[in-house]
Length: 221
Image (cartoon, rainbow, N blue to C red; front, top):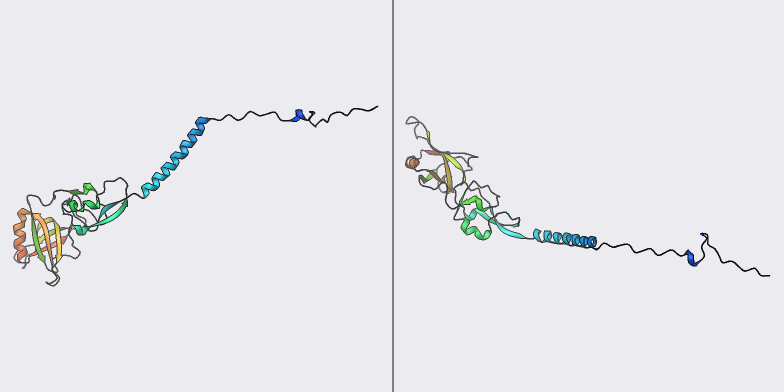
């Protein structure tokens, strides 16, 4: 008598078809979060692109190469063109240099300064009614070395003979408008200074007789 074979049983006690895994429902997707992630990625890429483009956005500006005293007129020799990043500050464009040379420094400007619009004014604070320009021809010993335009100086009366009178200050803080080396008078210099009109006559009188000396006032603007 034959004995029928029993179907194979797996270790979990289930027959072949029944041992298959039950289907797992697909994970639920959240379209809102996915869209937000895409927007963040695109926004980051756009910001990076703008920064790169901005770093290459340069403008032509004006840099001061010589000290310009308050009230002194700008000269083209004291200006140079530089390329700088466009930071949004109020720098004066190189294309406006013609207008700049018609204006005056509102404050003392040191070399290397990038010029902004608030550094210049249309009228000089020095060349106003009540002021005068005086030329001084000075010999060695009547001026210290290193005097340049925009410096402040004391104009001092120094009598040729000490028994005549005592020296005295005629202008306490005169602005040096220009300095030129004559080149033919043994190292003398020609200074143009701006002084009070009331003192101009006396200064000219003593200058003509060589009884004027100037003292540099470093740090005074």
